Image 1 (cartoon, rainbow, N blue to C red):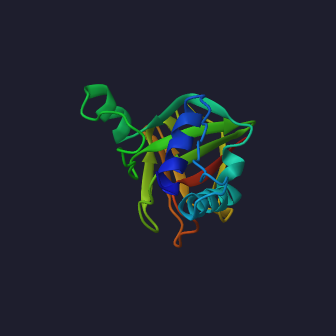
Image 2 (cartoon, rainbow, N blue to C red):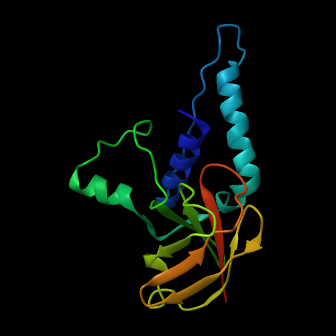
Amino acid sequence: MTAGQIVDNLIDIVSKNGNMMLNVGLRADGSLPETFRDELIKIDNWLKLSGKAIYYTHPFKVYGEGTFSINALVGKKKYADYMYTFTAKDIRFITKENTIYIFILDWPGNGKNIKIQNLNSKEIKNIKSVSFLASREKVRWKQDEDGLYITTPASLIGKYAYAFKVIMK
């Protein structure tokens, strides 16, 4: 699996209150093959930007929304970590204290509007601010009965899953 697939699976698992164990095969002499090393370095770089949204967190009342859960329910996809590619429509939620972290599992594009149905004003009433975790940049957002709408930053920072930090009042 690539670093991106591992990061996406980690977020998916944590959003469902799970733990992930990563097994890396060593050579007969105990050394780490370069291909594994390179992927582990990429995962470490992602954790430096967004690990705050993973460590010491809890699942939200729903794990997420998007095409993966829909396809899995109707049996269109056979679940295997290495076979499924998450899209920008796959969103996961993780919480810590007065914060909800929203993960968009693929970049939808710079300056794009994203609708998050599960964070509508009927369910969540006290949002204080929304920011892009990797840069701490505040993003434009609005909320109504249909969902929370956030606008992605004009420039992308990082790779793989993209975290937004929603601070509650």
